[in-house]
Structures are given as C-alpha cells and as structure tokens.
Image (cartoon, each protein chain N blue to C red):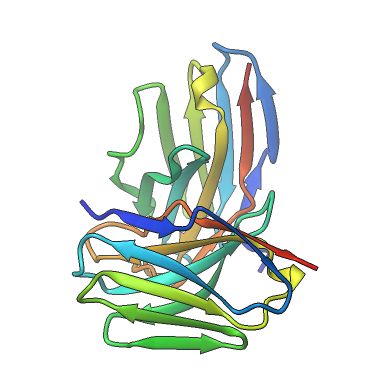
Length: 111
Length: 114
C-alpha cells in the first residue's frame, strides 16, 4: 500500500528566504506526482504535476523535482512571500488507485 | 465552469442525526471522489466513482457511511447516525479521466458533530 510522508509538518521562514519542502513515497512504481496548495478553509489547488518520466517541473518561483527510484520529491520555493503561506500537499498516482496524499507541510512566511 | 460545488459549506449537528453532503462535479468530468480531511489522518479517500459507478469504497469507515451518484451531475455522501468522531472536512473532487492528471477539488463541507 502506497504511503506518502511529508517533512517537516510545519515550517516558518522570514520573507525572502528560499525553502524546500520534502515528500517521500514508499512504492516507486508511480505514474505521476503532484504538488497541491491548500489555503485555510479552502480546497486544494494543483501547483505542479511531474510525470514519472520527468525529473522536474517549474512554474514561476516554484520548482518541483522527482527522484522516482529513491521515492522522493522536493518543492523548492524561491524568494518566499507572505502570500505563499499555506499548506502544501504532495500526492502520487500509481495507476490502480486514485491519488494518495501526504499530510502536508504548513508554511508560514513572516513579513 | 463554476468548479466543483459542495453543500453545505458548514454543518453542526447532534450525535445520532443523519447528515447528507452534496456535490456537483464539473460538467464533463467522469470521475468523482469523496475525501475526508482531519488533522490526525490527513486527506483520506472514502470512495470514488467512474461514470456514476462506485469503483472502490474500501475507504468508507463504517456502514454508517454511504455514497450515491444517481447521475453525472450529482453525488451525495450520507452519514447515519452521525458520531462526534465523524467531525472533519469532507471534500468532493472530480476529474476528466481519473488518472490523477487533472483533478479539481470543491471547497469542502465542514462537519461538526456534537
């Protein structure tokens, strides 16, 4: 059974810092991995999707990498801003079940 | 499109009462998912449908939970009788293909059972 772990559970950084969020999964036989953002009281919004054949995806200040063989992904946020404060979740799709989510990392960017 | 629409957004009910949560998926999406989110357990898949047919309900915690999708534009998640431990945020999501590539979440139904 696929399990997804995210470390740290919470992170607080000053504005302007670059930061890395980590995600690991137990079964490397995945089709793709996604990073989502969840604002308080809201649903999840997809940020980046990496197919199993890809190593990374970039969108603006966000860069997600995937090392499928080691079961790891990172989300890099450059020059963090207070508006980046949210919970970030990663999820993997293995083809036989819907997305399996980690519990998320709660990020606070302090102005 | 208005996105995935869930109702009610918030509900407070007494233990033992029946709770019905509703979801309207995005038009044209043929997969629908019900998730439950708590601080302790994170986001858990309860059940999902493809073309209105339940595919996997192994995540439904107990017989007190049931879900239906009578047509492509409507689904319900029912809890009867409700218990305090059912307090959580319940999310509905839909996708075109069910392969994880394009999935859209509603804003959730916040349930409190007292």
